[in-house]
Amino acid sequence: MAEDDDANEVDLGISLESVAAVVDQMRALQIREEPDSEDAEEDQNSEAALLTEQPDDQTLEMLEAFIGEMNTDEQISLIALAWVGRGDYGPDEWAEARRLAAERDGGGRDPTAYLLDMDNLADLLSEGVAAFGLSIEDVER
Image (cartoon, rainbow, N blue to C red; front, side):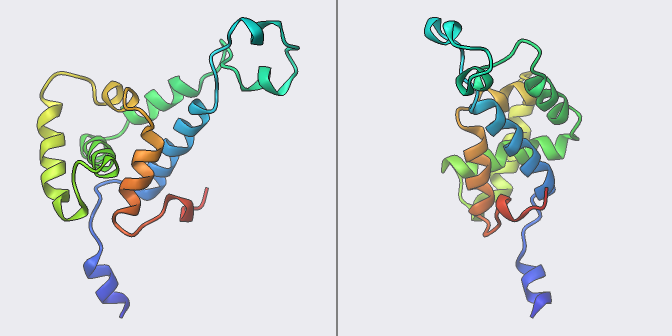
């Protein structure tokens, strides 16, 4: 029976661990808030102050480097997974989503910048993975 499960599994072109790492880093970025004038007056050790973006925070740079160091197939898979998570494509259209993601790569825009400009990227990737019956939450961290 396990062989049948393996035969039905789609090759995402990227490991779930890599997708989970991007999701985790994006969620870390999303919980941070831009400080406003009220926050600026709060105690620097308060919970609100700790959740604001700090000038020395390296999370975005680490995420950019992580995605930038992926091979082209992995970057294409991240884009296609986000599109599946957004509902642009279904799991049965995976090959088409990857093909179009590869074609958009020729548009000259950096795949890392393209991905990081997507609203709710972490949720889109999680939903994209879930469309294939997989879960980011099951990945050991």
